[in-house]
Length: 304
Image 1 (cartoon, rainbow, N blue to C red):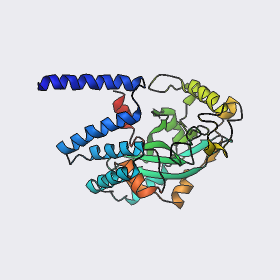
Image 2 (cartoon, rainbow, N blue to C red):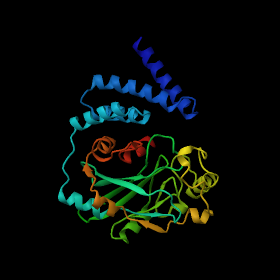
Image 3 (tube, rainbow, N blue to C red):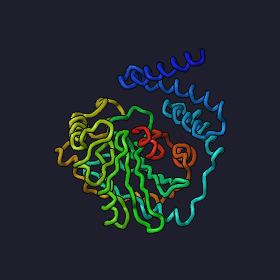
Image 4 (cartoon, rainbow, N blue to C red):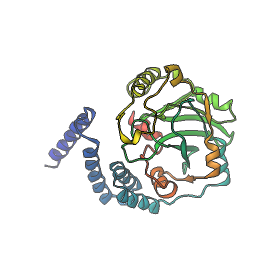
């Protein structure tokens, strides 16, 4: 019977995968199934921190903040925060990216949280904009975006630049070269209102999941926000711009500098841990945020 049960388990997982791809199973329903799966795995291996962290993330995504907080605290009890060395703190500031927004950007940068990986020379810079133009109704009073900088600790130079772009991770050799010409600080272009992050050379790049070119993606998003975006009449949008008022050239005019290093120095939210969402939730922010990918390798693993 065991072989039959396992065969049926694998088949059901394939069915769920396909139904998720077809958007016939909601994220909420899927999250509940994944939480139950992780509960079973936690019983079998209670020392695996990743199971606790992923379960906290799923509760967080579903809006169960007290339960998420309980699990996130457990994560950091199992694997406590590590102290940053003076050198790591210096690297966090040295490699802090520079952001370039459009002149019409409607949301300010609220916070930046920098998290150094505990065993690798990579720093995650977590950017929290005041909101996302499409999501006034998600009970998350910010828009969480990410930039990762991998560096050579001996030469003290940038080795790789990666960023979050609408559930994808982008990287670019041109972004590395650009950082080398800007005192090792990568330049990140920020999409109006929605804050998808773009790297040097984006005009000739494709997003990695579907192969859609980034210029085509931005043109479609431009058309979307020019017509008012998602839920244009939502009451929480009453003080926001009614739409993006300008041309596609203005939408991609990344000419206004925002230096998050100023904010990081004023409020030094700098940590060292593998468990990014747990750290931000329990040690950094006083408001809710959307948990996102801790480190880019998680995305690249899913790409095979």
